[in-house]
Amino acid sequence: MTGELTPAIVRALWEAFKANKAVDTLLNTLAQAKTFFRWMKARGWLKHPEALDGIEVLGRRKRGKPQLTEDESKRFLECALGLGRAGDAGAVAAVTALVLGMRASEIAERIVRDLDAGGTKLRITAAKTAAGVRTMKVPPVLQPLLKALADGKQPSDRIFGVVNRHWVLHSVKRICAAAGVPVVPAHGLRGTHARLAVEAGISGDVHESFATTTASYAGADAVAGAAADRVADTLN
Image 1 (cartoon, one colour):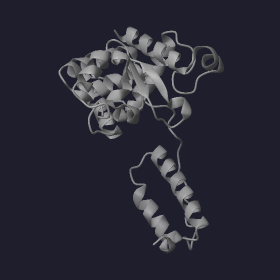
Image 2 (cartoon, one colour):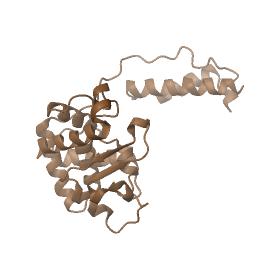
Image 3 (spheres, helix red, strand yellow):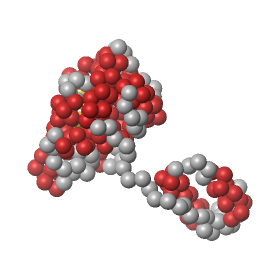
Image 4 (cartoon, one colour):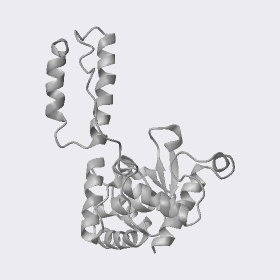
């Protein structure tokens, strides 16, 4: 079937796909398609490897994800904590996204044995990069919520149950709506966490890429732990 992908067919598929799509989505999809075409061409599976030539995306990427202000973050956290204490696992995931700055996939994939040291540490055992493998200090406000979800489960069971990153994304948006704050994506909470941590006195990037001095003298885990404490303190 790949041999049937003529320029006319590819153009028609693209025109149908691009309707009502964001610029970022179109740019990402086109880049992925070009990579796939190069891979197929190397295997001789395309009669028209030039079929994507001439397809362009007009517009620029958005810079950064929408974030919450400090006041909005406090309302978000208050709402999520209330629902989380009532047994809402999605609300606990939303709290985790804000106070730890974790990716949605990292939250969804955590298993019970990742919650370590009496529930005071959360281990990230696999990530996109080696630097992403880390141990995060869990702020006191989050500890009882994670412990309650892990209670009674086997070490290999998922803390949040059989969920995926889309469940986390939906949970964050749901809590935003319930808290009466702008609806932001889970990655927007990651950015909010980073900004709040820097404003509270944490120098350097609190994501996986740290400044040389941070990596050399403090270490990624120490900085991430300090960042989580500062963010939680700021919002309490």
